[in-house]
Image (cartoon, rainbow, N blue to C red; front, side, top):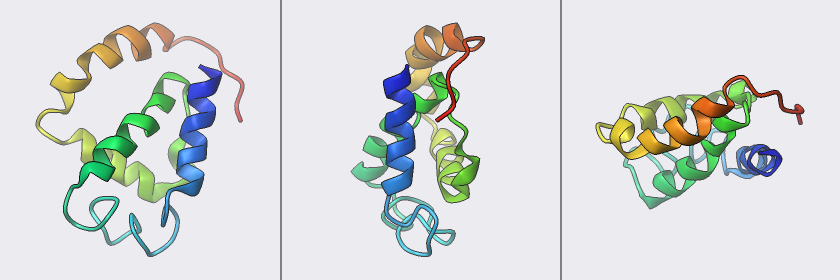
Length: 99
C-alpha cells in the first residue's frame, strides 16, 4: 500500500494543471477540458488507488472535484465494485504512514 500511496501522490503532484488554470483547472470538467477522454479513465484508475492507502486529496481541490465528478458516472459503482470490496473496505481501519 505504500506504493499505492506514493503513486497517487506523485500523480496528483505532476498532473498538469492540478492546481493551476490549465487542463483540470477550476473551469474544466475533465482532465483535458469539458469532454471526458481516455486520460480521465486512465488517471482515475491510478489516483483512486490512493483511497485504499488513505491519501488525503484536499491539497488538490481540482483533483477532488474531478474525482467526485468521475464517481458520478453511471457505471462507476458497477465497474469499481470489486476494487472497493476487496481492496478499499478491508483496509479501511489500516494505519498508513502519511507522506
